[in-house]
Image (cartoon, rainbow, N blue to C red):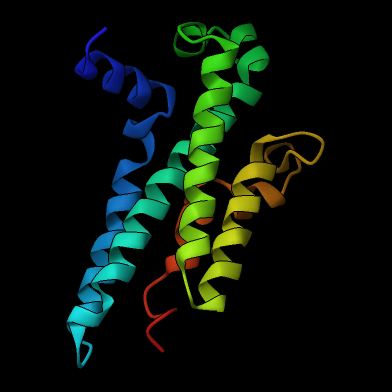
Length: 161
């Protein structure tokens, strides 16, 4: 298997096609906000960190969701993607993505960003993972789902105040 095939499998496993547009919107908002700063060049490292963070968080959240939903998806016939991967491939993707999220959080120096990023990571985790599994808990689903979990920490204006 060559690099292109491996990359395509990774994108399928982490469901990149389902979250990449939201991650791009977060990065574009950050870039626009930086352009209005007095010294925008000082914030490019932060923008890079945000881009890496949302990519890892999207990969983590969606691959974890696929892994946790594999039984339910099989019952309703949505098993095509899940069946293409072994349990160990899912676990590797989840571990790599979670490690990437944590590495970015360790790099950040602003404690507000670290706490908010950690909160988003926990929301993404407990959205799918048992025993909490917010997606099955009524009103909590609206606040813990993919969009809020990825975008909440980096809403425009949050870190440029």
